[in-house]
Image (cartoon, rainbow, N blue to C red; front, side):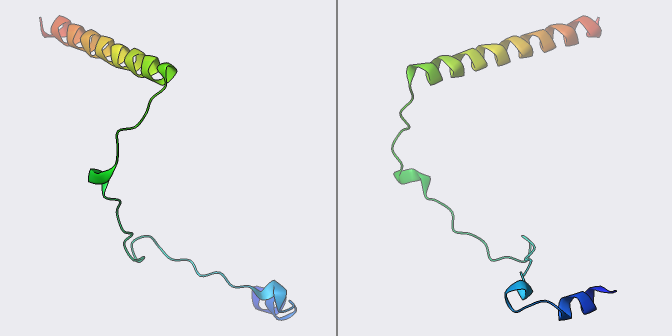
Length: 73
């Protein structure tokens, strides 16, 4: 039994066909103008987490720089 014979036995409700559009062929979406947006309000927890992340990233870059200097000798 092939796909075409299976499709012939379906009712009208079961024959819904969906069109697949590749993102490269789709119309471009309109972008949001961020110049008119207000600053985002952050809670204390979010602010603490962002500072912790910033500190972690600075520490990792420092360790990377130390390792590069160590290997450069």
